[in-house]
View (cartoon, rainbow, N blue to C red):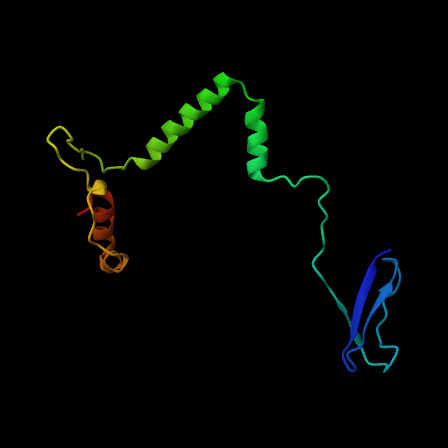
Length: 132
């Protein structure tokens, strides 16, 4: 049976009562007769065995993979990482690395966040896209 905790509004008496869910809860304090209210707590959970985290699940899954599957996953990750790291230039814009042009994202920027926030949205977009 669940244990319920109550507290008196008037005298501050705090007490616990073991009741079935179907039983009526007390409404007044036994000491002074003033109204009482139920105190609610966050439910507690108990972990039996070892706790499962995302890292431990990923490690367990990779241990079950074959060498070929692991190599394929590593290549997919590398490709995905390169794709995310490469800039997305506006249509028609290219970077000519043969001429020795340094891409803007490799140059040191002197702009601070405050400077960028002062820009109009169009200038912000241009700065983000091409660094000007």
